Image (cartoon, rainbow, N blue to C red; front, side, top):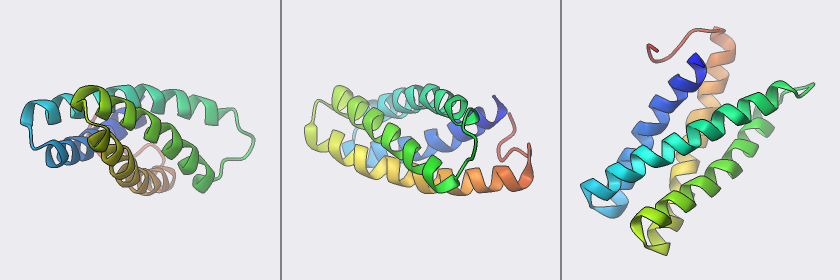
Length: 121
């Protein structure tokens, strides 16, 4: 759970920054930034549990599967809250890309550091 909470903090920061920049609206940007990471944190937890069952874990493949899941959630939340297909689409492309890059380095650091957390949980 510590790992999930650490990634949630990184995810929220990225989601808020991008949502606000894309919408120009503090309220909608904040709502997207709260809801999208919340849904994706649950998806992240389930994703981690699924990968625990894998015999061999390849960081690249794990990152790709997370990116696909993340894209779907980001588009759904972005469109639902903004009501704009373009904003939902941009958010779905940009936000998961940023988070996937962050996830790759997060996962790599987590494996190297064992249970060392980036953010105090």
